[in-house]
Figure 1 (cartoon, rainbow, N blue to C red):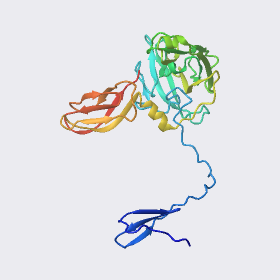
Figure 2: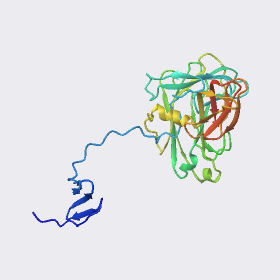
Figure 3: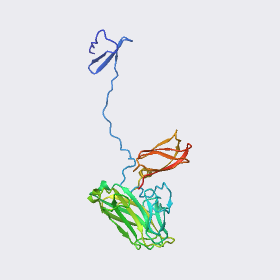
Figure 4: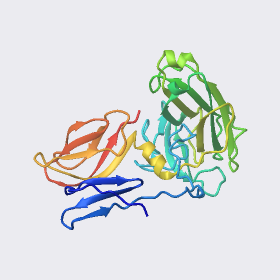
Length: 324
């Protein structure tokens, strides 16, 4: 073994290296201590890749096209009122209609729930509408709308599908691909899948038309029992053909819906112990806030959070509405 020539008269903590080894002088024990070495061996084989978690990127550009989230209620008869998240009822003139939830779990349409729009009185048009963001991201591409529809036994009118880009709800249409589903095409038992493809052009970008507005409207229909149409599994995707309806994790659908509408049970404080709520996702605009008890007031509301108070501190249901 080779002789190691340590320094003479070392000081405490002094480091000495010889070849691949390092020592540190300890005055308390009067000796050089060999420093432990870390030796890295060869890399072992790569293990199997684990399963991927749920994707947060959705093929379907429609939020709640599966009609799974109904934060407000499961039925409405009020014109322009939302029932299923992102979808609202639309009636004209003397028309009276109801928009409600149906169960489609055993009907092979790709979703557990759907929507029924029923004419109860009047003869004017009735239907449901959704406004979805994102058209400006797709200028120069084609997008395909698809969905499943069937009718009640007393429905006699056709259903028109209006699909276009707009800068605001009910605004001017810039690009469009409307179709009419004839009454004869629809069945009272079998679901019919409709499709239409639209090119998103510079007309959309020039006019800042970021909204895809989709309307399903039945016209000239007298009110009667079973005068309805039902809708399920609505999808808008990039491309010129309709593919299988996307199965999206419920938590992702709910998170996407909460950009537009949020309902929470929370403690609301007083003017001296007010409540600040941070929203779980950034909302589309600063929301209209409702709920609370006596003396409820909104001190401030942004797209990220709200600040509320009321006369007596208590648990309340608060809604934040940032939809179109």
